[in-house]
Length: 167
Image (cartoon, rainbow, N blue to C red; front, side, top):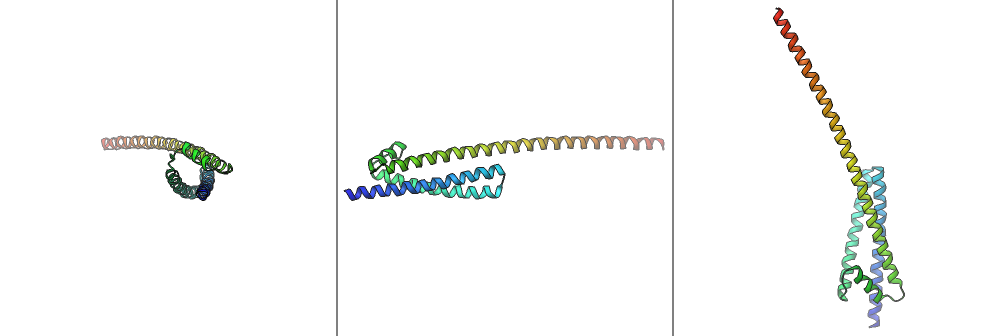
């Protein structure tokens, strides 16, 4: 029974450590994404999006492992379920500390991702406004050209009519 407890402790510690590392890598990718967005660097942004997806996939796999671990001991896959599981299997406070760091990093990831989303929305709004202004100016120029052509055409018709009348 004691060996099972040690094994559970080590599995939990390994899972939380891997989750912490994956979350930290995601946080770095989000930071790089923010810089790429601010610099309007599409190549760097593409790289960041690929890295972000890779880290999210890793976190998803770790989440499935966490779900299985909790289910095996009849714990709910909720924040409270995981917190209770960690407390029951913690020997020296190390798991609880590790779980708290995981939560903090994931919270920071959520905030950074929301911030990057705000930057993207803002940039898209600016581009849409610029496009609208540009299109509006194009329409104005087009109208001027059309009006100018109409005037020219009317003047040419008037001239040709005068010439025809005089002949």
